[in-house]
Length: 132
View (tube, helix red, strand yellow):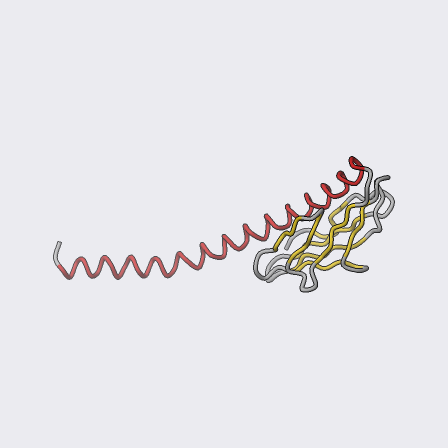
C-alpha cells in the first residue's frame, strides 16, 4: 500500500467516524433517558412497598433543581438534560396503610417527556402520557 492509499484510507475512516459518533451519542442519550424513566417508576413502587412492609412513612423528595431525587436515604442523579417535577410540592409521601399524599410527576428533557400520577387512595403510580 502506498502512502497516498494510506492517507485516503485514514481520511475515509475519519469521515465515517464523524458521521457515526454523533448518532451513537444520540442513541446513548435516548437509552439513558429510557433507563431514568424506568428507574423512577421502580423507585416510586419500591418506596410504597417499603412503607407497607416496614410500617413507616417513606418519602420521595425531588431536589430543588429537579436534577435529582432522594428516596429512602438514597440519592438518584438524573442524566444530563432531564428534570423531574411534581405537583403539589416536591415530596411524595407513602404511608404504612398503602396510601400516599398523591402527586403528578413530570420527567422532562430535550426529547423525553413522561407524566405519571400517584393516586392518593392507593399510592399506585400510573402513566398519564406515553413517551415522546
